[in-house]
Structures are given as structure tokens and as C-alpha cells.
Length: 600
Image 1: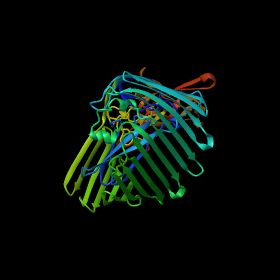
Image 2: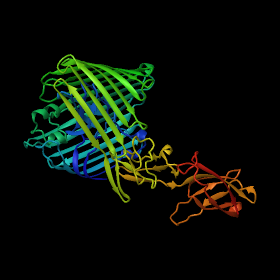
Image 3: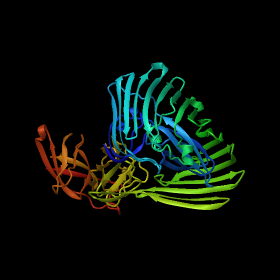
Image 4: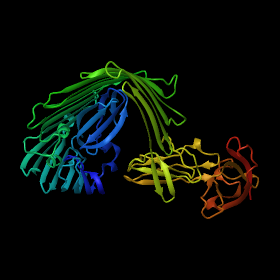
């Protein structure tokens, strides 16, 4: 259940932002193999550029990319289908925009599986002049059979009512297909009434023998009077920019995506779409194609993009070539790159760069880039460094070009208030884990760059996996000689901060040779350190076949109780005192004390 600001699911209707309440099934609770879809966005940057991705008018992703082709694979849209608006802002301020439609695979569920959502709330439009009505949306998808899924939904508000019905079917070797029809009644902001139908077809086919993945999704809006909920509420209030990227009264849309694996010869992809609108001449078109391969560790890439806007007939084309060479033989964790970019309406530019990571945990990233353009800027370049530490991220960069210089820097992180105090951290993400290892300061968290425990033994592991078993381990190489810690597994819920409480043992490591009446203590005996206080943690071990017992977290002196035999009938006690300090640090060179102890 969600109470507050969120997005409606978009399996059946286009997703919209709302403020209200939502009760829905969560696919994150499903195994990874059954989870949903995330599109891949690719393009070509003509300089060190900022890439912004919007959906439904809202920014859902923003990053900086180097000159040349780029591929963004860590994108998580707020919905599972629709249009993404990609804005590439070059270093000189120029902007290029294009639309990338995307759609998940055909709607299919396993037999007797159920996916549902119920949403009531207030529509939150990104457009200031739009209507913002209260609405109700309900959707239901059910697996009737392993090869057949049925689904339907309703969308209701004062001025808009729509209903969708459809089904998905597995056609075996032919692929999978889903088809649905939507009917909508709309009262536009101008009080004009309209009604219409929309028909949607989605198809998916994977050819495993040839390594081909083909997705074809065709949309056909059969009547001029059809509007979706978002368009219906701002149909009469579009400014010129919105008309370019938020056109209404869609007529038809076709999109095709093909990925081909070529084995040792790399991979090839082609994506294309065409969208038409009622009352507007021409087509909105986009095409992207690329080829990538790797040979002896060197990566090569060729990329091409084409975009065309309707009405004006303007179109743009970009071509790029890139090569990435690892330099580990001479400079650890570093690589050099070269790229060439040329376009129909753009100058030809070339770039060389050096990137890498340094420090023990590879938490300092650096980048040096130099570019040359045959028009305009001429020579330009930038230097960048980013450090990821326990309490956040620091980054700084310097850019220079013909018309100016730019210095940028930033800091980001998180802070958590919890029952044990305050803990500073890197960016938290949606789900995080609070590490509690009291008495163990400066200990690294394994597989998490830059994350270490603070002076009080606390740390935060960001971006944990919801509804999954997360292994949280502390790096033993960063332990002090007198610290021993086990490993924890946690399963956080979505959006939660989950505690991983480590049983920290602060003390010495000791290998004891236990004897009883002149003979080694029997194999399998249980040796336990007696607690000095009720709150002390239990510390036990099993005796080996030659009377050896290994302990961690041992105080300088104490008493052992040893039990063995049937139902631990035999018992003896042993007092011990650790030897005098053997090094300047107070611990033996090996880190382990070795001693003989007589049990009585």
C-alpha cells in the first residue's frame, strides 16, 4: 500500500502521477526471473554532455556522459510503457531532444497468477494549466492458463471514463502476442464531448538458436475522438514546446526492436519507431542502430541515430565510432578511449580520454578528456575526479573550451536517525541496511565501495535489494587484531531501513591445547568461556581430536568450562591468563596466542 505521491501502473493505461492511496501487488516480491522490464536508452553526445530523461513531463534520470556514443542501462521508468523524452545538453549549451517510445513484453502471467492495482487520488499534472481531477483506477491481470492471460481495467473521473479489455497468448514457436481494446468518453476542457476507441497489439519473439531477440509493438488509434487520461486533461492548453513533445490525439504508432548476438563477432541492435497524429501531416520517426564487439580486451563500437519531427520535416542524423583500450598492463584499473562523431547538422568532433580508479578500494575515479571540433569550439577538454567515501560522495571537475571555462563540484550523501544515534552515509537509495557492529570502528563492508563503519561501529549499506536475501559481510582484512565478526543475511521490504546486527567479539584470538588428567581433552568436547556479566555474549567452541580449541574475542584472563561424554556428563574447569605482550601492539606476530591449559 502507498499513501502519498506516486505513479499508477501502466500495464493497461498510461501511467500518471497522483497524490492519494494505492493498493497493488508488487512484482519485486517475485523471483528475479519473473520481474518486469527496463528500457535501454542509447545516443551520441558531441561533447561532455548532460543527459536528462523525462517521462510524463517529469525528470526520472539525469547523468553526464563523455563525448561519443553512450548506452544507459540503469534506467527505471515510473511506468512500463510510454514515451521517454531524451534531452542531450552539450557543453556549449546546445540542446538536442528526441522521443523514444518503449513497451514491455506482451502482457502474460503464469497460470493462476494475479496482478492488480486500485488507485484513488488527485491527478498531478506537470503542466500548470491542466485540469487536476480526482479519479479512480482499477486494473486486474490474471493467468487463466500457462498460455493464456486475461486482463481489464477502468479509469473514472468526472470528465473522463474509459475501459480496457484484452488478453495475451503464448503462440509457442511463433512467439507471444497480446491484444486489447480501450473505449473512452471524454469531456474536454473546452466542454466539447468526444468518444473513441484505441487498439493495441504487442508481439515478442526470441530466436535462441540464432541469438536474435525481436520485439514489435504496434498501436492503432482507430478513431479521431480517442484521448487518454493525460491528454484529455490538457488538450486545450499546450504551449509550443509541449506540442512538440506532448502531442495529442495520436493516430497510430509502430515500434520495432531487434537485437542480434554474433558470438565472438559481437552484437548488433536496431530500434525504430513511427508515430502519426490526427490533423498533423508527416510522421514522427526515429531510428537507432549499433554494432559492438570486443577483441583481446579492446572494445569497438559503431552507432547511428536518425530522428524526424512531423509537420516541419526537419531531421537529424548522427554517426559515431569508438574504441576502448584497457591499460592494466601499465596502469592498473585504467583505460584509454577514442571516439569520432559526425552529424548531418553537426560538426565533426574527435575525442581522446583516460579514465581509471585508484586507492585500495578503487573509490577514487578520475577522467581526463581532450576534444577537437572542426567548427566552432575547436579544442576543448575537461578533468574530473570523484571520491566515494563512508560519509558520502565528493566530485569536482574543470571544463574549458573556446568560449569559456567552467568549474563544477558537488557533495552528496545521507544521514539516518535511528534508536542508536545518527549515522552519515552515501546516498541511501530506496532501501538500505543499517550495519551495527559495536566496538568495531573503521571496518570495511565487503562489496560496497567506500562503505566503512564509523567511530561507533555503525555503517549504512545503500541500494539494498527489496524482498531479496542480502548478504552483508565485513571485510576481515580490515579488522583490528582483537576483533572478530560474523556474517549477516537480511531480507528488507521495499523502502525499509533494515538492521544487520553483528555479534562483535572484541578480544584476542587464542589457540589453546586443553588437557585433562595428563591427556588431551576428548574430541568433540564443548569448551565455553564463562560470562562475567549477564549481558555478555556466549563464546563456545568444539575441541579437536588433539585437544585444540580455537577462541576469538577472548579477554586477558577468564575461566573455561569443558563438557563431554553422554549428555555432557563429564565436566572440568580451567583458568587461563594470556601471556605477556609479545609485540609493541600488544599482540603476537601471527595475531593468535598459543598456550597450554590444564583442565581440572
